Image (tube, rainbow, N blue to C red):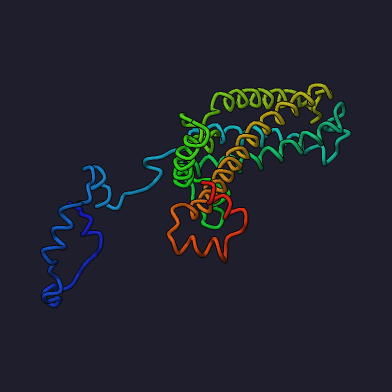
Length: 276
């Protein structure tokens, strides 16, 4: 049976460590006083080396994002024919077909960004320390959200989970995504069925504009939710940083108060402390 220590690959004669291999009675007592506790399934996984985030976490929108991407890619393929010879491929909606291709391109870009974002807040994405203050990941958003919850409970009497879930709203639009997916899938079928024997798309401008509107609406949904989550997280991060700056001025000792009152404190700080 595999074990955590076995994974380390230790291979040495411990007798050569001499007395250095033995823990003191105090060290043993400390280990026993606060032992690391693991459920059996975690110990088994840790010992076998089979720990993978995707085993335990998932992006609930992965499937619909893939289907949306496939459908809009096919629509884009048809719409891009307008760039070859719009007069013959879309004889009744020449300019609209160009707009449709642009809408498809923009939506595919946003779908990639939305999928990446929801991977991050679902805990399966790879977070980067370089953008940890502006782009939420599961761990960071939960940590910051918990701090914001405690803070806003004190300042605004907030007693719900909005401060914590505010960076996760994109996970809660499954119904809307599914509806958009159905609409865009039907649009793709309509476009396919409208291609005549000579390769022309027989849809008129009104019908093509309707498809454009569907794609732009779907784009607005995911772009709006993603940017909301990013903004909420960044705002929360900034609030916590500001709070930590202000916390420096609480419970000042005599020496600190002397420095503030006589050397480093502005009139604003000195007056605020005097009236606290």
